[in-house]
Image (tube, rainbow, N blue to C red):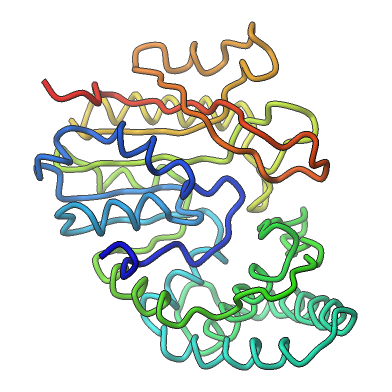
Length: 310
């Protein structure tokens, strides 16, 4: 049964697929009891938790938000125009397969440049045929770039370098079809995390996976959208989390980095989320240019409920 489930179709820095077993143990008891029928995720990214929850529990509606217009574009195309997207991706996959490594590198940068030139001509407010081609370009780049790192520069251009993969899977048509079916339950919305306010109520499980607070000077991967997500934004998110807890009765979960990995005296999140339950899970850090600096680190999971049933 598990093999037939939709999986995340975007490679994503900090994606939660590897953490799912630990996160499941922290899901609210009311979700397991079937009492929560709405799912909200204000930082969509790779969507691993959405796909897990939507295919495991009786979720009747979902709201998926992201501030990144490209992420919203891709998910909307997968949801509403998946067959046309698959046709476009087949073109990229066939062409890429015929090239040697140097040709693949040149082709990658050709597509990346075309994507960045096209950006100013895209109307991100309305689904169009241009969205389908752009989604295909983005997915192609996501599958062939360095570590699947979705990174934008200050101008909003995609700037991740080429990744040297022997046989990247540019197209997984069956998974895209399955993902499209799962996404039918969802409204996909572009905007800041606070745009989720109107959808969160007592029947909701909301999961927040913001850009992580860097734990070192070389681990800052918050530039997945123009702007960034600094400590002021982390503080604003904590206030929003507390507001939702006080006003909605929803079950809330939030992930972030653990500052204690590098500084045991850094109590930034312990102070911000002091009224709530703070759990620590273990993750494998894969995105680092130096292999010696990859390994197990702790991450925080914050909940406004006790994960253990009464």
